[in-house]
Image: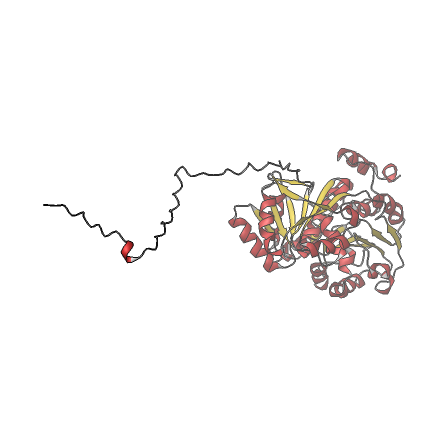
Length: 419
């Protein structure tokens, strides 16, 4: 097993960090990378891919002040995260690691390179810029790693990556790590002079992430998000598809007195770092972000990921959901969807039959609404209202007059009396 073969300093630190057994991608990566083989490592987000390549590759490095290991990341956030991990573990072997990302001071980075690091972690654009200025010398590089390789091999990034890699020696070791498979990864030999072994551990990884939805009309998603934000203990990374929607949503939620933050593509490095640290310290309910800004960020023990906008592909859904339920821990992904959207979500999740509907009830998220007993009450008999007034007497018909002759009529004549 890997844990029995690693460097003693690594072994002690592994135990001190209370890590459990290595994950499948860590176990399967160790020996091939140690032997200098080229590999493609496929494993879900949150399964420890960084340590999967870091531990064996660091074990081979020499403390000689020559750059030997380069790790390319697609975003500043992932660069900072990976750089922190590499610096932490490299320090155990007295190795020097530097992080070179865009958005930071290039002058300071040039100064840091004068310390002659054995490891460099960074974004393609900044490292290519420094190498063109001959401040970053690559002729001694032994191994290059592409982290989030599926993204780095997309058309808009591939040319810069290839240009940068060509500056390194032709006989170098290459490793490509990704949470999702792609055609470019399976045909990597088309882009680089390599024929790697493929380590696909997607099915072997333990994932306890639940997938669900909250039935919501598109026009009422902001209101539903506000209600979810008021659930006790709520903490979620909320994904939207457009930066304009991000600004609108943040303003609306803040107006409703919800403490929310943004991870904005227009933010500088210090603003992004502040937003992440504030959110990690539980000082906000939601961190609103887009897919590009959130790629590769690590938020320990994040309980929820919320899709305000549904992702445009299965790969994007996997990257979003990978922000929660990391390293075998429990997590939950909620999508705000209407009837049509529910059908789309079922196409995106790993097991459509396990999609659960959630409701807001009593200020809590529940997967079942309580049954309400309806009592059948008999209607009371109708009361007949009788009037206390006596009914009016019916008018009697007048008696008919007898028909008499004129001579028979009584004219009221008086009887004559004698004098």
